[in-house]
Length: 157
Ligand code: HEC
Figure (cartoon, rainbow, N blue to C red):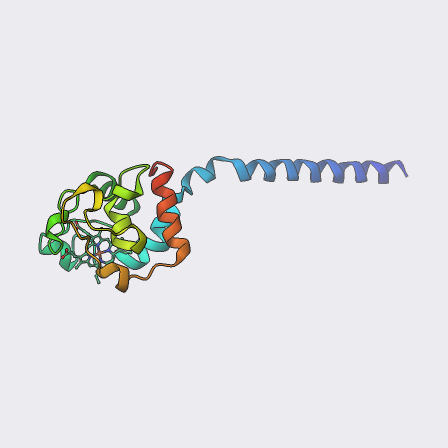
């Protein structure tokens, strides 16, 4: 009888320990790697954009648009530190791809999301943002709102 009771107690304490440990795991250091940008890169940029926008890609080799989406960190650096070159939309040169907190002056938003694309974008007179990607990319509503949320939240890596 006594033995049975202690076995039950042992089981209960093991179960408690297990639940406590696994509960901790959820909030543990692993979540640091899964920022919004990680999701954006893995689900949207890597599958849809990296085929063209890498150093070995045609657009890059022609020396026009130097977007490098080959890795998550090159994508982050490109988007947050470079300015638009815009070979076809001639008045749109020199706009930041991403301005943290401000999608209305982030060229990335204008390129991909119709409601952000406007004449005189980001205060550039006569700039009509390159609009081919509004048609050929067709991102889902969820992908679009993720991009905007990422920018609004400060464009963290
Ligand atoms: C089929 C090839 C291709 C794919 C796929 C592609 N792009 Fe592009 N992208 C281009 C070309 C070509 C331009 C041309 C620019 C020009 O002539 O103005 C461009 C322009 C751009 C520009 C403007 C660059 C500048 O400095 O003016 C951005 C930003 C951009 N693309 C982002 C993306 C993103 C984000 C994706 C994925 C959602 C994507 N592209 C997918 C070919 C591609």
